[in-house]
View (spheres, rainbow, N blue to C red):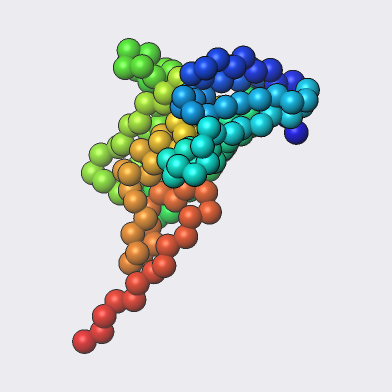
Length: 181
């Protein structure tokens, strides 16, 4: 069932999803077919379901369309947790402004290095820092949100000995025990 506040504009190469949070487009392979048999129903099919690539893209295309619908109606959110003594984050105004393609804000993080780590926030990401050890990222595109969260996480990946690092959502790591002599 499709939400009533979403509209679609299909073409042979892409499906445009228009919703209250904006507009996005999902690229379609030439063998993918989209039909609207009823007002609130969409059917995704392929030309030949016996071909492996077409079967794979059948499910992938359906999921990409679903993510576009959710993104344009509700959006996506992901929390990041900074775990470690002295690990802190602050959202501040970027002195460079929007020169590097950002939205004028940046994350200033203390991650145990001898220097601060500055990460400019892209214009399509909404960032909040409700607590010094929690960062909340929001976006209408699930893929771009995941890429930016992975970029922030890459500055201090969780390590298995002390359990310190930047964790995405409810990420868990198994702690290793130290070898005894």
